[in-house]
Image 1 (cartoon, helix red, strand yellow):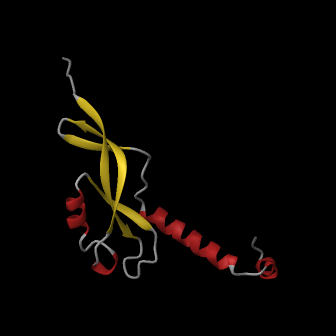
Image 2 (cartoon, one colour):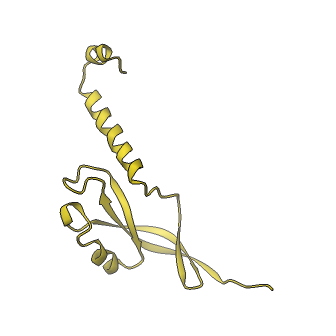
Image 3 (cartoon, rainbow, N blue to C red):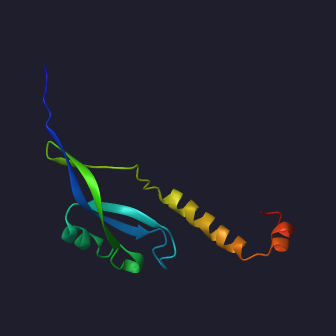
Length: 113
């Protein structure tokens, strides 16, 4: 038996909602927590999901979607939703900022470059 599935590819405006890995002070890395096709829905959903219960950040971006049988899929680069990955990036950035404050002699004494 053969089935025909109709799919359409469209350019669309996407509303990405970002939280933070540090939900207390907001000093962490941004983490994508939602993607919406409707800006008002994204803004309503973002309420209370940001740092210290504030509104999460909503960013409007152009993207591409595929509609298949009533479902919508976002097409684009791979999105890493891993909190562990974001935390590792944050640790690396903190290390680099700390090392940038050291003199060459201090870095040599610590055995780091």
